[in-house]
Amino acid sequence: MSNLEIVGLPETTNESPIDLVIKIAKFAEALRKSKGISTRDLGLSGPAQRFFVNEHLTPENKQLLSAAKSRAKEKAYKYIWVRNCNIFLRKNEVSPVVTIGSKRDLQKIT
Image (cartoon, rainbow, N blue to C red; front, side):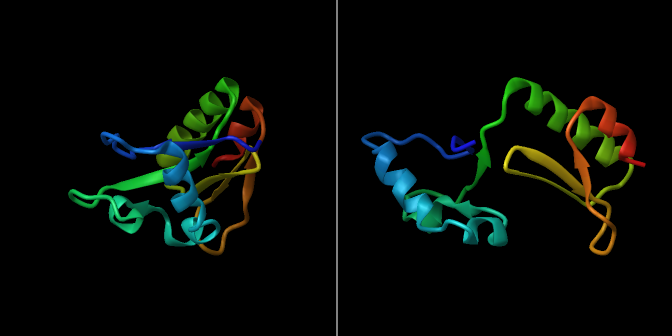
């Protein structure tokens, strides 16, 4: 639960992964609120490119998330997110949150 996955961050020569993680960590909870950051926010050269920091999921949960995203798209859900390795969906700003913990729960997405 304490592993993170950084997606979309370009590799550069002479980069220090530890320094990058420290820079990203300074954004902490603000990352969720801002819906991601870009390479420009970290002071990296080149064109600004968005990247994302996600919770590292087990292969089973990755498959479940993928299936939930697919079904949510079919049913016009607006929000899907993962927190503490749990998958959550919400159709719109005022609808109740749906929790997906197993394949059986995918039937909740209506």
